[in-house]
Image 1 (cartoon, each protein chain N blue to C red):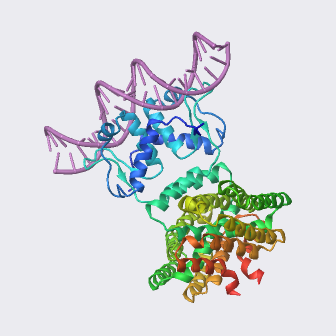
Image 2: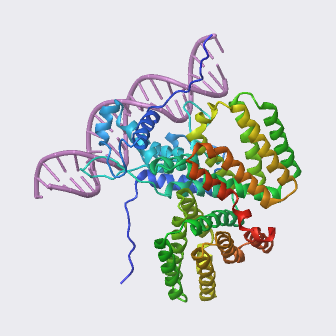
Length: 255
Length: 255
DNA sequence: TTTAATTTGTTCGTATGTATG
DNA sequence: TCATACATACGAACAAATTAA
């Protein structure tokens, strides 16, 4: 007897999604290029307009396409990767599972620590220059608007993540940062001693920068984790804050 | 003059998606519960069925809903979180950016190393029992079918990730493993010296298990990274394999 | 086992808003 | 201003699938 495989009915829009996905991933249509118009796809796939639209909606939801009305230069545009889709998935995890801030910060420490470690090893002069530039900007902005200061802060971490040379780490870092700020961003901006927080942050970032410059990777990662533990510690329970500090110092306590 | 904010036209399906998302995230409808039927939603939202369907398609694409035809007990079912949506996002990153296997393995080492570290600290007896059980099963399956052996292997890593107590790390570990296996899974299954590979894997896993049992977290993480570096090393360029080994030994070389 | 009811899946036709030349 | 090509949205209808009487 032949071995039959279980089948499940394949929906119209699903096979459209699969074909378009494959066309994108195979490089048949590159980011920036455009698909045929909906009416043209109706002809090519031999299905109704609604089915084509549902397939396109699926692909737009997952960030691969973007379409807007009244664009005569073609149909939906293939998008290059953006962390938006990942952000949405992680947000679903955080909100569905009711994750605690403590857990997000541990994850952030894992990713940022590794990013910093790799950045210290692989950094180019150009990276170092951009990190230093972001740090200088932060120092000049101490005492000012938290929104603006935060942008320089983000740039600092972003360049380090880039310098790690690992896109998965870079993207995860970006997402993790967004998740944490989504939970306590407004609380942070309304701190009474904002200027002092900013100054502390600058000092700690400076120490990380120095270790990256000296290519002392383990210590750079340690300081990066410590930075996060101290920065976000006030927003979790005291015993959780202690656990964050212990996790930050993991390598040193082991020696 | 008042400060006007830029606006962008909001699509019909978008505001439907937002409302349903909010209903899910606020706990108004919990996973397992069902939304009203499409025709009922048409009435409630006051839009056409096509718009409702496009919104539902969006939410199904992001994994929050699932609907199937002919179920009189209600409409789309709210799903609990699954890593499927994350897997899809990461796959898009890997394929759009043409990521190399080396990069995936480094990411996997970061996550699995941290998971193992945390597991060694937080493990309960129940975790230890399940890890040991998975390891015993692996040892019995050496020399057998790689598919079956692989399942026990996955269980081993899965329990460790659970024992870490961090869901973000657990999910990332699951996804990262899927990505790597998606790239070299079939290559691995067709190895000539499969039994030897499996035996080596068992030995290394045993060492990790011993360190988790002794709660020596740093060494457990080190061995977990080393396991991956040695296991996947043959599938990347020689100099990349050396880099993986160096990354695995990072803590020890620093001492 | 059959039937009826309810649901999603799919199609067609039509009308409208929007951007480009 | 107009013509054109596009996405957006609506309404009605039928097909297919599932469940329960």
